[in-house]
Amino acid sequence: MKSVFGRYIPGDTFMYRIDPRIKVLLSIIIIILIFLASSFIELALVIIFVTSVYIASTKKISPVIKLLKLPLYITLFLFLVNLYTVNSETVYKNDYYTSYFWSFYTNPGKNLTDVNGKDIKWDDFYKTNIVGSELINYYKSTYGEYAKVQYGVSLNSINRTFSLFSRIYIMILTTSLLTNTTRPILLNKSIESLLWPLKFLFVPTHIVATIISIALRFIPTLVDEAHRIIKAQSSRGVDFKHGNTKEKIIAFTTLIIPLFVSSFQKAEDLSNSMETRGYDPYEKRTKYRVFKLKWTDFLLITFFSLVLVIFIMNHIIVKYTLFDPSVWQFNYHYIGQYTVPNLFIITKIVV
Image (tube, rainbow, N blue to C red; front, side, top):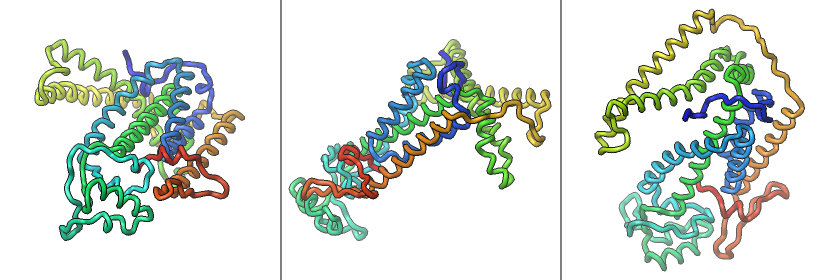
């Protein structure tokens, strides 16, 4: 089955009728939102919104599930990296509520030392921490007088990994929604229109827009070509699924080399086609389609701008709200009279 990522899917739903420039802007705002999100509740709301819009717009559910594959592979790899890079010292230093649900580790650990190689006591480690007394008593009763550093699986690393997975998935799904519901020529024109202010800096915006448009359009083409090459090589006896690491690397080269050759050939064919049609990137171009904003476009951009402001405020509040274990309460940070519920603090994303 052909990949839908980067491929235009004909349709007539609400997303298809939105001004292409607004769709590009909204996609950028959504990507900004997921990096501003300070709690998993906000990430969950964005995921629910984007997946609902995708299913309602394209009338397809399977791509939403298939697009999970790449983020899963990336986050699994990074989770394994976290096992050997994020240690318990990172957890100790975080004033996050999630860190007080004690982490579970896979090794007994060793004493934490200073620059001179001297063992550090828990009292010295937390002497400047405003909530250190409660933590000192807890760690002393658990590990003894000296601070321990350990590597392994913890709620801290799970928090980091899951937040990264959510963000990558939302970015892929948002980009896919944009390309699935916008014709390549309209996407090209909308990007060029949004980059218009850069003309004052003598940036050739029409060339940049064309490059971006062609790059997005080539993604599904290369995916289809990769599937075709895999089938062709499999019919010749190449096994991509079984064997040891060395055999898989050799099999992988039989895919990569033909894919590069095919990519360069397609790029040359595209270049020749554009030249035979008289395309000159430096000539002044007229526009057949003229974009006009409707009231729904203004409404959408206003709504998402308000959501962006709320996410910024939540980010500031959650960042500066601290948990005090001595009274088991939060020391809330306020912006005027505005603050966030406890659940936003409890589900805070570790950074």
